[in-house]
Length: 179
Image (tube, rainbow, N blue to C red; front, top):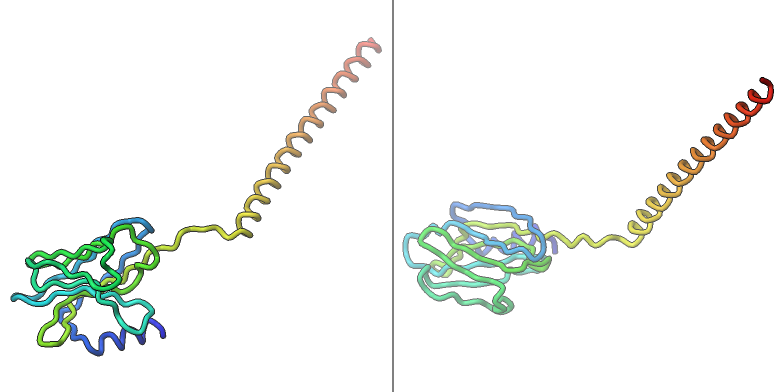
């Protein structure tokens, strides 16, 4: 199932209200804080979800109101995630991100058994820059051959300089012998 069909199936049971979409690209092991506007003017059940390449979205965390305690749902109770809110913004902090944290994160409220989405962030954690072994071998071979070529150029120059000095000495000796 591709991301488009996941989003369509996910948003079929969600209403969107003043939707704001963001894109973030981060390095592994960084700390990230996602945020979206809290558009509700009354006490509501606030939540964060994550959608990946799976058929359904995963509920990360929720709270009854900005002042209440946070409930972390299955798979997100490891201390890596932190949810906070003030009266106008809902935050989700993710510590030491890795590639498994990539996905579409969205937040909103549950109101009368209907989810209302305030905003979403597509988070992409870059893959580690592990080098392909053939690239490493070709790079090393290129550097080695470059050093060999430079060494040969230096050696040839020294050889030509030596020949020129030899010719100069020979000419000097001939000149001295003839005079």
